[in-house]
Image (cartoon, rainbow over all chains, first blue to last red; front, side):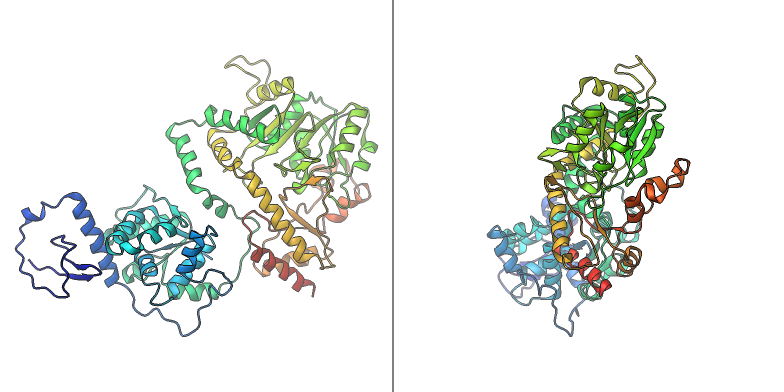
Length: 96
Length: 501
């Protein structure tokens, strides 16, 4: 079986195994022999989690890269809240 | 700004990469949240929570706080699994059908999603579209009102359908009780519409053929046609030159031996001058039927309109301050016997099934409309307050435009501004100019009642109703609804100012 390992904040994510934690290296070598029967041992929640993560990365891969503009963006020019941090502060202070 | 649903990956990036760069997506996202135009499909919620909790636990609490400021839209069950997008990516398809419910756009960077859905747009393209868009101000905006309470409304409607409680039932008895309490009367009777409420009330007041009913010349035809349909004769009274409601100085000259009822109309959300009207009614032994179709919650001397007369009628036409999702109306009263008569007349002349004491009509407020109104009744005080806020802003921004006359309100009246009506000699030209600038204005009413073809038989002349005749070419209703922002009022006011410059 061929699989892939994806680098994440806290280690590597290996979709076909469902191992999320404790692999703290940047690169690993894998030799996996996973039968269909073994794969079926994963319970529903684990499989669902894998599917969600897989979709997230699939969408990331399909993402358009160039989203830049050659002009100053001024959508929030007249707003007090100008960033996500401002928004969270306003929510925390009960101002929004 | 459009209603926007943000694709899950866009939200995750905005939240987790916020310190790296303030990009376009973030600005659109924040703007949409501030303008209450940001939505999430319910189908996204578990995925977003899972990915953020799993990959970015340090941002999870932040996400939950922001999620709480985004409206969640349902995903309907009427899905087409043969749809191309559904076949490629079922989750994107579910987001798409949620977005269609709110007539919104989906902000995504996913090339496949952009390709397969007509209502997706990249952050860059949306920014360019938004930047170059022209502000459009509708005369009223029921969509925004619905979206501000869609969860409670959907639940109420689902409840009626799942219980098949279409006629009568708890939602109607609750509404009758709630509405009577809100207005401050002993009884409320839900009926089919506002015109029926007037006809049934006149019947209950014992109107006989030849009986005359005084009606303001400046009103909607429902007020006068109800008189004719109830078997009476319409007698028009001119409107007040400043207030536009009935001119109380002109009522007595229209009273004859045949006069039976006066119908004061609380026009545009302003109360008619009830003290003198009640005095005249008392002096001449006349009945009062208040037409409150445009004035749910308006007050005259600290008392709600609808509580002065023998009976009062209300309309719940969708555009009204309290509007159903179809037709609806109500009659309110404190009088036990009038209550009984109205209730019977509206229901084939019966109280009990098959025990018809006289011939009536079939005019019911159905269960679905009653459920809708029960939800809306909880918001009406806030909405009316916001209408007054919008009116104050218009008064502020238009105060020095000499060519227009702003609404004048009696000092003891708390209006509810169903309409915000200005007066100008250049009414038609101004209305056209506003239309060219994407602003919808209305005319209430372009032909005074006495001058309608329907009343040719009365042979009214302009000098009989000089104020109504003159004002039918001068009154203009500006957009007003609770959700209008100061920015929108300013925009309309600036255009009016530009027109006169």
